[in-house]
Length: 119
Image (tube, rainbow, N blue to C red; front, side, top):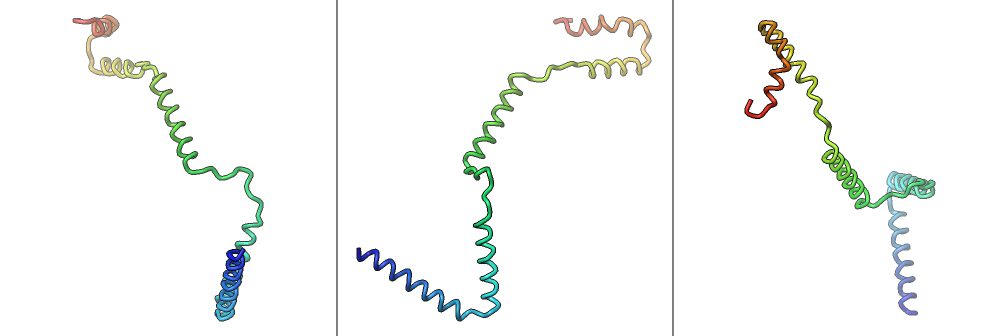
């Protein structure tokens, strides 16, 4: 019981000391302190957001999980190689070289020959 009274006396002593030091402040400082206090009280009484702030570890975990899912999707389902653009560029280069037409007519044969092992 005496601890509670000692605590109350201690708090009262602190309040008296702070009030006395506030009375000795310059008017400019007092005005600034009152402005800061008013701003703090307004912020405290403002309606809190609907979504509570999540702890940092939850945000980091969510980002890590999202990155893992993206990596798994990329590894699991790689983009198919169409090769369409590359073959068109090769055909254009062949035409641009000025080779005889009979070579171009047999272009499919040369493509097949390139794919055959030991060709």
